[in-house]
Image 1 (cartoon, rainbow, N blue to C red):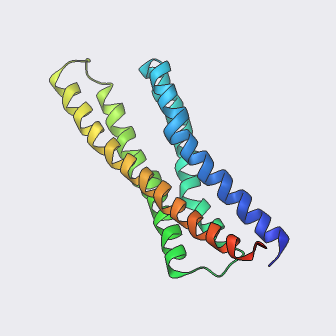
Image 2: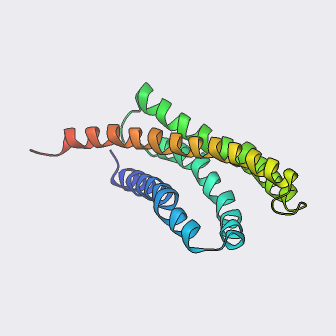
Length: 155
């Protein structure tokens, strides 16, 4: 087991899992509560393209740098994470962005605005589900990784 490969794996896993989890469940809720909606929306529109690409590619590189042979469960967890990030990146982000842009054409409170807001909320909920799936699947991989490390640490 190469020390460089192990170090790369551990750092990549830690940064991607920690970064995604922190942004999703700490930084983003704070920004939502602290910023006016327009500023929050502008922030998210700049963060999310890179955020979801990271979710899509990080599991691939985590798998490629694994210092241990990957089990079916480990590969599955990483694949689920990559697909979740990819779905958010190429399907749900464009969908929600289009709904937000369409909503801007209508006056707040109008029937059209309310309908588009409802539709946006539905797709945003699906995106949150894919984000949670990423956190759980990549987190599950981390549990397996920790078990492998525990086996080689002298007692």
